[in-house]
Image (cartoon, rainbow, N blue to C red; front, side, top):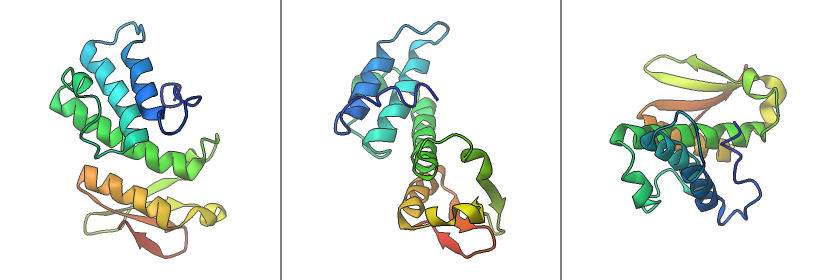
Length: 149
């Protein structure tokens, strides 16, 4: 969580690059270079976009293809969760995943958070679906499903 918010002071236009640089040059104990690249890329993808291929080729060279893929997945999850929680404690535990059959997974919001249901969260969920190659929908308890775009 602390690494996810490491660039909060940076201007939004530079937040991804700033976060990447802080993590890439930090002195972590017990984290090897590929692990550091994974952490830095996950933050960069979160801010710059998970399909941005031009992000830090020199950092990507340190990571394995599996780490790069997982960094994209983690970034996509962070993009969904930060939008739905506004980084407020206690919201994330109230979200749940449900199987809807035929391989569809629903991210279900409690009825008390129904106001968060909309196109923007569904769009972020669509990015996560694309990265994970899964069929995902956004739903409200007792309400309709909104397919990820």
